[in-house]
Length: 65
Image 1: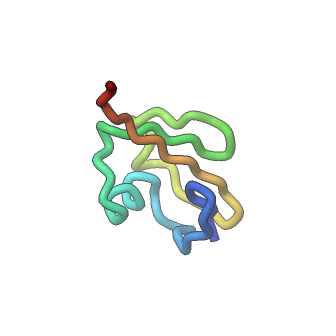
Image 2: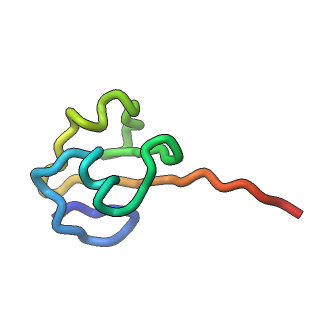
């Protein structure tokens, strides 16, 4: 299991890029931290998630008052 944004997800063995696509994220609109290290977008396809990993996905949003 991989903890993603605080929830356990069965995502071990797939790449960050693959997970983002399956979860409906657009790569250009998110930042990913894996085990407390920011992952560069160029590395998403080569970075494979493992059991015990902790990933945080941050989506940029516009708006304001």
